[in-house]
Length: 319
Image: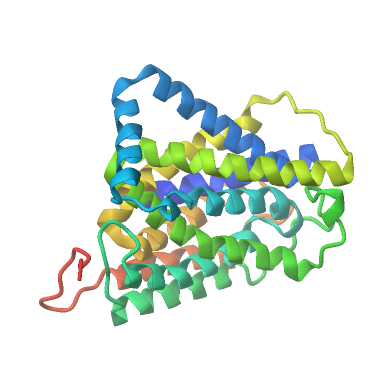
């Protein structure tokens, strides 16, 4: 479960970085594209220098050829691109807490279905009362965390010009939809990792996501005609490197924890890290007592979700 906390912490830090980059570029999709490009470049260099990693990629290719992997199981990067794109687009407008509330609610709601369908490599995981209760408590926790959190910005500075007039409800709905896709992304990336290893899963994820973001940004750029200058601060480009780490770690962990428990522990990591970030690098919203209470309640949710009845197996079922 420590891995889940680390994944959540990475998501929170990446969100803060990509949100800042989106503001600097005045284009959240461009920020997501840069983030994916950096991650893909790091992975490309790693695969170019390691024959073991290249063997893993070849195993993925063979898995596609023999039917072990289905083509749709390589599409997790589309959900990752949507999630990172929403980071860059909406965090400057609605704030980190509102983004987390919406994204986590979507992620945890879909995790039960993803586990029940057996999309993750561990197979089907039954929807027990404890697991459903843990998800419900966690959703309540993130809602509590955002209850009195003021809006971080009144202007959607990171929105492309074509989306400048987007209503606020759409900015809230977008990360919720991205959160729904995040559970599916973790599951299918776990399938790829089971065949070719976590780094191969990360490479596929970043490659697919980068292609999708480049296509979308090309359309937006053609319609707006607005260019941008890349900022010079190195820390603004760390989002992709952080993404490589937590995507690979999630691909390894999801088969052991299942999508729901991975989501619950990562939520705790996201909220806890957000509180630390608000102390180290405070925003206009500051630290909310409700956010602290929400973080504590999420830890309770993790404990509830891990409760097993006598005779209940810990490992997911393949049936």
